[in-house]
Structures are given as structure tokens and as C-alpha cells.
Image: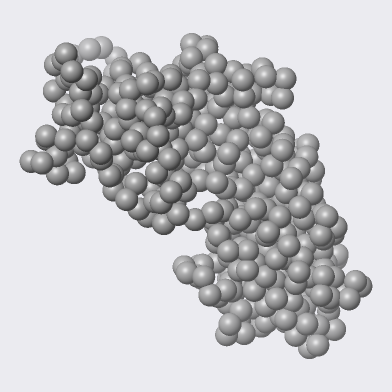
Length: 474
Ligand SMILES: *Cc1c(COP(=O)(O)O)cnc(C)c1O
């Protein structure tokens, strides 16, 4: 029998990328694809045996390393920096506590997150409270507990003025400001506009109120910002506003907060080859602006990083449950089947795999080309296949095209990086959300969120008495 011939396949994904992915092309050198049989030294198969599939896996070491590197990057060029952990990026208690142990305070964007941080034992003074909707009761609590509330809009400012009207002691507040740095898209949904003087007017109104102290000028320009210069531009504009406010009111705002938005090493769909700048490059860009000030005028710098710290610390293990798109009678080589079928059906002919996780667990798959590697080594040539999730929705595709060697049902795939946003944005839709484990620095894997069961999902449901089924009439 002759070996099946695999024609060179230029996938649409490979076509968009350059040399980096050419190295992944089976025809460029050898026939090997990389595989991931271990995460932090722990066997993928062993993890699935013990905790089930799919399974989120986090590494405490990676998380601590990225936190320490970020701290060093900023403190070595700008010592007066305070780091806040963006809860919404991943608010599992164990993950937050690792960062709190590393000295990160909490940055929350809703009443729910505020409650979560307080329940974790974080004092109000170590919470930064952002977000476009902070209910009155939540503002009352946060202001009385000493959190810095970063005011988003005029209505919220009015509400805060009403809440503090009876107070004897003034409270610290900040304002969120949106800045056009020249990068698109401009995030104009949040905060007061810098460009038309709105932020200046809000600052003046706060300073003229004896019960409010303007503590922070804040701007979070977006997420996954690939150009460190955007932060330099923002810092520069915010400092100019600070000077202006001081000239008019004599109040020198003590703190500026440049939000989060530093990228992880995940890759956006549809962008040509690019490299992600290091965290040190962002620190240099920001410090370069702040350090121009005379020492006594330098503000405290606050940062609210999320994605950058946790994305690489998270993996998702998923299992193949079906092989699609090829009549596999006797054919283990999907590419040979695909090559013929694609002449007739084009893109739709592409073979694929259905796995036991879907976009309900991988919301970020819409924006990022999540990395996929098989857990088992293979010498067979990789083919471009589609990776389908397990939801009953046609749009549930994790990767439109990814090069994988032929796989069988029960083969495991390891998806990475997925540590940012996927757990917090996961949806409970037709399936139980999976367990999450944390591999400690000692290499021990422990459950930090158990796999959901029917009782968890139904625990908030109420069936009116008249609808309680007593006997089966069906
Ligand atoms: C989401 C968010 C962050 C964190 O953003 P990343 O891009 O994950 O670093 C920081 N600040 C605010 C106000 C946010 O909404």
C-alpha cells in the first residue's frame, strides 16, 4: 500500500500569517506538530482521569511570576506604583487571593464584585470601584467603607453628592476619563470626555464640594492595547488636565490611574504577524512621562491589570467526542478526503472535530485565535480542520481552521492561553460548567471550583405550588 499523499494546504489562517506559522506547516520541516501532554509537570491524561473533561487548569507559578515581573517592571522605573487586580478578568476566590498575597489591591466594576472583594476580606480602602452602574445602596456602602469610587457620569456624581450631603468627613473619589489616543476603537462609553472639557468641569464640581476630595484621575483606554505609546499619550494628557485643575482650584490631584489593557500573548484573529510588547515596554512608556515631572509633583500611579497577568496562567483541556466532515471508512487521513471534497464544496468541505467544550466556556474565541495542541504526540501530518464546540448552535466554532494531526474520539486537546475572561464570562447553557483546578507551586492540583451539578443550576429556581408536579400523568 502506498502512503497517502498530502497535498500542500495553505489554510486561510496560514495565509494570513507569516513565517512564524510557516514553521507549523508540516511540509516546511518534518511531520511533527507540538503536543502538550503535561501542564506544569502534571499529566493531562491524569488530570482528566481525576477531575473530568472539560477542565480548566490554572498555574499558580505562572500567575505569581507574571505578577512579580509586572511589579518589578514598574517599580524599577516608578516606585510609587499601586497595583490593583481587575476582578472581572477572573474572580475565582483562589485566583484573587494569589494576587492579594502578591500585594495587589482589588479593582471591581459592579456591586456583585464589590461584595465579593469585601467577603474575601479586602478592606474598603483597598478597593477601587469602577463601572457604569453602581446602585445607590452599593455606593453608600463603598463610600462609608473608604473605597475610592471612580465616578463614571453626571448622574452618578449627582447621586454621590446626595449621599455625602449629611457626612461630616469628606470622602475620596476619582473620575473616569476617556481619551482619544489615536488608537481605534476609542472607548467613549465610560467616563467623562477629556477632549471637550467635560472631565475638567466634573473635576471642578467635585473640588468645589467640601465633602468630596478628588483623589484620582483615571483612564482605562481599552484592552489588549498593542502600542505602549498609547499609555504615554494618555499619561501626558491626564497630567495636562491635572495641571489645569491645579491652576484653577489649587488642588493637586494626588493619584493617576491608567487602568489595565496590557496584552497577553494570545493572538487576535485577522491581524498579520505581530509581536506583543513586553510589560517592561509599557512601564518605560508610562514612567518616561511621569518622571519628567519634578519629584515632589509626581503622582501616585495606579494600575488595574487583568488579562496580562492571568491569561497565560490558564488552560482548558477538552476531549474529542466526534470526527466530522469525512467518510472515514478506511480513511485516517482527513487531508486526502478534504482535498477531493474541497474541489466541490470549497471551505465547507473542511473536516473537523467536535469537542466537549464550546464557546459557552470560551467567549474569547470570538476575538482570539486560541492555541490548540493535542495532548498526544503524533507523527502523522497535520491538516487544517475546524474545531467545533458541543453546543446546539451553528456559531459554536472554537477555531475556523487549525492544523492538527488526525485525532480519534477521546483524544484530548489543550487550549491555551484561556485564563483571562473565559471563566467569568462562561455561560451555563445546556451543560454543566466544568471544574477548575489550580496547580500549586508544589505541583499539586486542587479543585478551586467544582464541576456544576443539577442542584447548583436549579438552586435559584422556584416552581409555583400550582405547577409542582405530583404524579406523572404523562
Ligand atoms: C476590565 C478592566 C480592567 C482590566 O482590563 P485588562 O485589559 O484585562 O487589563 C481595568 N480597569 C477597568 C476599569 C476595566 O473595566
